[in-house]
Length: 313
Image 1 (cartoon, rainbow, N blue to C red):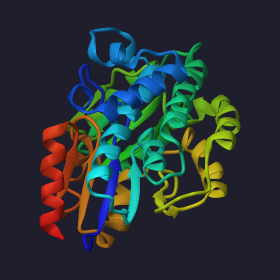
Image 2: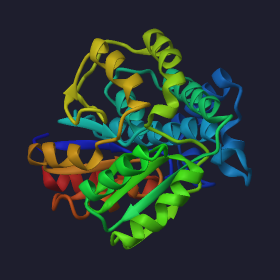
Image 3: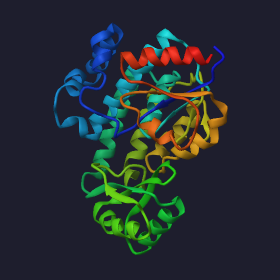
Image 4: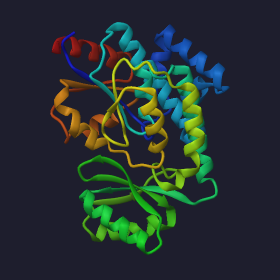
């Protein structure tokens, strides 16, 4: 097929009770993957995803749940239309889903791995009052300057997610984020709001999780990339285990360069396909690219995306 696609995978914040249920109800392969990851991890993913509970918002459960739904969505798409992407790109946790889509991680191994990643992140933050805050409407350099000024005064705050123009997420100690909020608004932020997060992702507060994650990655990663993955850390492509082992642990303590990744590689593709619940990345891409963006989040959107991609070819 001549169409050039990028495969996209969302991260934390895309979760919702009921996600993946349409796949589960209508696909034997989806049910088999649910059973396999439940058996490996001891987590009943059908119960976790399809019933009201408080675990879905805990990062050690959120991460494997999101990856599982993304992996199912991608597998069903690939079964129907086995095309190789120009590259795969995930937002934070989504980079592990991207690795699964290109064969660098087995899906069951990946769910187990990000369950560990979430637990390591939670443990690194367990004795700290941490949080994350989103700033809307300020330029990156202004947010960076305000964070740097706050750190000079002893605060622990860092820009960590470069999501879209005028949208940047800051992580750090919750009290420092609360102090920073009015300064962002005074500087002209349209909105500055604390997020419902129990960890401080992609900043130095997660340093204790880096080495344990590296050790787990060494056991799980395969050197079998069928297409490159764009690194959150560098916005550059990589396509081997050695590079992945260097970049993925760094991802824990480095900003997510999502918008930079889209800007750098947009001219290489004809369209984007997002695998997973909702269409979070479609929203981020709206101002970054004019290329078509499709989402596979249930059986209906799977069929619509297959049709749309075939029409593009």
